[in-house]
Image (tube, rainbow, N blue to C red; front, side):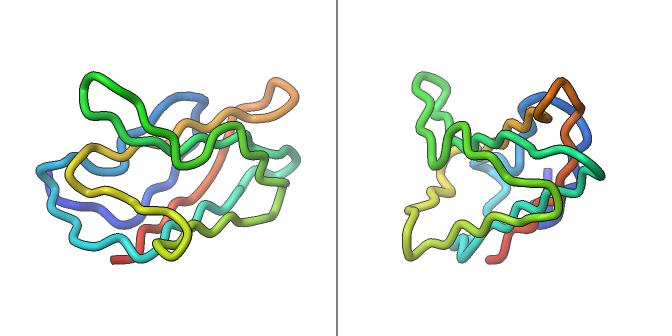
Amino acid sequence: MAFVSQHNITNNASTELFTSSDNPGEIISIVIANTHDSSGTICDVFSNDSVNTFYIIKNVIIPQGSSLVLTNEVFDIKTDQGLYIKLIGQNGSTSAATVIIKT
């Protein structure tokens, strides 16, 4: 699988952003934009080494029409493991977000 820097996600599930073999290079930032029309989105971003899960953020609420920016100045985003995002829409809704990874 080749590295993909942009993802549109419209479900309440975990989504793999990249695998360890995708070779994305250094991650400079990750932007998560809530694109849902009427609800906030609860967001987790994490890596997994097939044994342990390591959270970068967990249960962060991104309000409707807002974005969250994660930078490598604050977070050490490893690329030797898979990186995942889990989104859950607030109030029983389905999540909707755009994720952009800058390398």
